[in-house]
Image 1 (tube, rainbow, N blue to C red):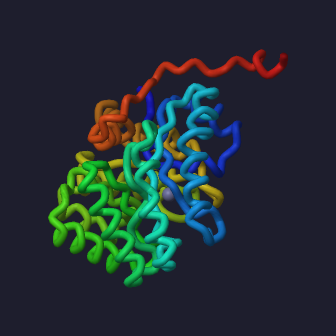
Image 2 (tube, helix red, strand yellow):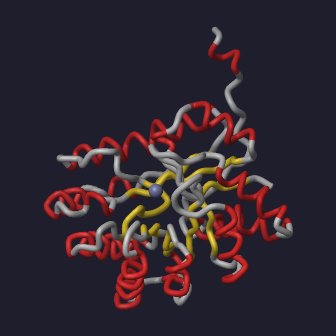
Length: 278
Ligand SMILES: [Zn+2]
């Protein structure tokens, strides 16, 4: 089985990670735009970053045999600056049109403020208008409250729920987000967020349908091999191969297939080491 990593920030990772991911069976990744570690002060900084992940990161990934796609957004952590949000969204179209951009994300909520809700709603509507998939970020704190607000907005706007993935769920948000037709994301982290055992419990309770599991690796203590490790845990926990394929390939494929630009290539040849020794 080839693995799709549906949410990872390769911008923050090194080449060893790509090599290890390839070796572990990961062939396709999706990189949503994220917070770079400090708040951007100019819309141009967003645009240069979008350009970088859409152009350079895709080429870098392909050198290691991995097919790389992106989602682009004004992320919730930087959505407090409404003027900047408006500037970024007014110039975002050319990046959404890029052949490697298959969705909007991450958008959603961080500390649950009016300005964050404004940015989330606007991007939800842009995605609806363009019929693009959306990755929605649940807040790290007050998660249940944030999940309720997000679900209420999605329902009130009447947007297509099958094109939305609500990500970073925990036990406390599942009953809220599963009460929609949205895909639901589970993030496996070494310490914070979910571990494989909790993922196993959640999937047993809610089923494998519409469930997307991601590693979400970034600058922090995270693991680009979260998915292969979780597969191993679930296999030992009695999960059948067809369920594992559903959880680590088919569901993400179904979700992103809603973009006509999603054409995963599982057979990119990594550039041989001899190339670098010339
Ligand atoms: Zn992320």
